[in-house]
Length: 115
Length: 111
Image (cartoon, rainbow over all chains, first blue to last red; front, side, top):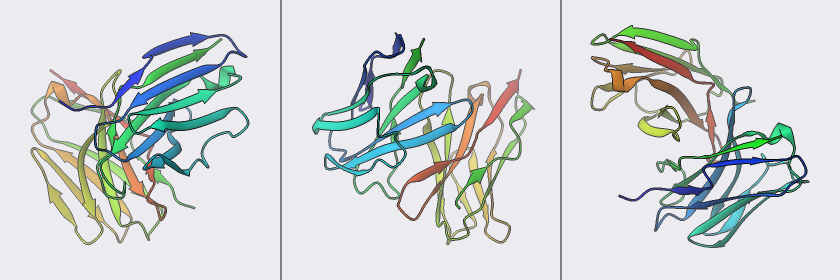
């Protein structure tokens, strides 16, 4: 069955290293979201794309985070340089159409630990 | 500003009983709300949604109630089962069509 996939599922890295997380949205979905989940802040929207164009990245620290969609089947979230406070679970979600009132399907997440 | 919150962080219920999970929202202009279920190690999963022109919506064993007067949302689960154990989030769609999630309530089902 169709589902959002994310790689890697787990990542442990040292402070200062570059981290790249990947997401494959459900085929045919044109809206992709990146969320971060922590115990303190809960689930926060970092950025989202529609038809591969970034629409909103106001939730993302601009100095170290970047999000792209090289093609319709791949979304990436990069952190450079990583910091311990970036430790969290990062979720990608996709939606079929406009994203408004369209069910968002979440991937299994990437658990990032920055030492 | 817009915010969504939950009254109870943890709810423990006996298997077979009904569960009620509550949520408060602050933006009276919000017109779309969703409940998500998140099991351990997994991403959130859509359960049920409701638009502001409705007071109640039913799904399979779940019912969402919306009280716009007091800005309150609830999720009712009938005949709670062990598989219902998870964290439940309410979410509100803001004016930019983005979802704002509440802090979550953990539901524990006792056998």
